[in-house]
Amino acid sequence: MATAAFITGAKVEFLEFPAVVTPPWSTKSYFLGGAGARGVTIDGEFVKFTAIGVYLEDNAMSSLAAKWKGKTASELLESLDFYRDIIKGSFEKLIRGSKIRTLDGPEYVRKVSENCVAHMKSVGTYSDAEEKAIQKFRDAFKDQNFPPGSSVFYKQSPTGTLGLSFSKDETIPEHEYAVIDNKPLSEAVLETMIGEIPVSPALKESLASRFYQFLKESNLNTQN
Image: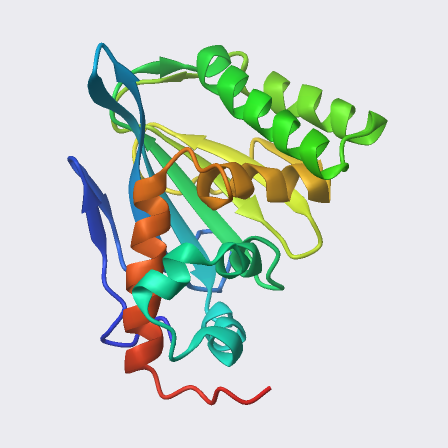
């Protein structure tokens, strides 16, 4: 499926996101669901810090088609259920966050972890286990520094395992730096990117417009 002609790459600022990737630790291929920038408004100007690409395991296409094929891009964008089906879907996700501007690890992880904790508390999934997982998550970044072009990779399994790895460019490392077995945290990472209060509206828009085209072009059966 991921080799289909309608699967395309994307460019965010100077960063290229290829249409399909096959990590060195897997025989599976992952297709680019969408990509977009994350930033903050400083003195009235939107400053981009990170470009995020969300890659999905091949079977995500058929999984999502059963419910969402035939919907318009606007309908997908306006439906929180569409994004939740990506976040909670029974397929692997590989998220690449590449830096547009320099960020040090503690600075980066502070905001990410705060957003994750806020979400987990809001939905009632934050307990002692999640507190320990958040601390392990923060510890993984404490000695990291991310110059422009460097990347953080999040591998998310359907069972809730979150794998972290770091690269000085867009190359996917052979080995994960840390693995955290906590489903609420794993889902919260992607939820904060594309959920109800997204840090990257551009990524949400990209996912909606691309999946509209993907499902329109595909010949997948929409019956369960």
